[in-house]
Image (tube, rainbow, N blue to C red):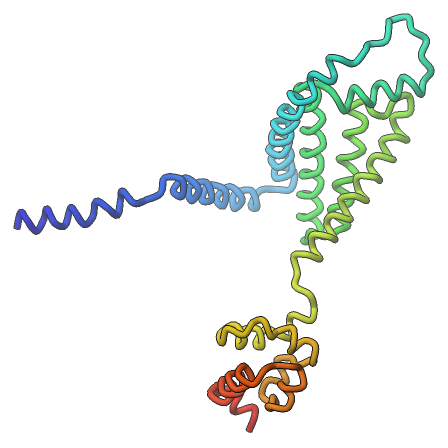
Length: 260
């Protein structure tokens, strides 16, 4: 009995020791994230917007603070105009813009906090109101964050409102372009949806290199039950792969039934 219990303990110990602490931490973090998102979705729009804006602002502040440490040397080396210097408005605006882009950690933390927090907050509100997240919502959020970033950072110079509008439009166009680009690359090409069954068949036979031949001949999933040796030969598939493909189609109950 004692030996049996000891053996059982020996078997159980590796299970606990083999657990990856990093994987455990990731799973725990994911559980907390899911729980937090679930709680947040049950809150009112003002509460959710405030929480999302604050958390995103803190993340942006951390990123900005880090970026500010990299640009601190640049900002410290910039010459400061004398107090009585008579600079024209254009030169003063350029100097302020340079300061805004090359500020220290605190300046960049503030700028990034405003930019990310406002963007996330507006996106959250529009998503709750409209029930979806699309390019219009993304561009509206980017416009708000760009405009406020211009006002807070001092990049507007002597004409803060027009420059804020210009910055907002620029941010919106960039965000809209990135949104559409990401959506385009996240979805498979339209033609791929016609070759799902074909791709699976070829992969199971180790013939995935011949998918391009099927596409050149427009041999889609709907044509699989109709395939013949001459059709495969016309798209330049060698005899061996042709035999394997036709044999697979013949053995597949669903394709054989459609073939009649």
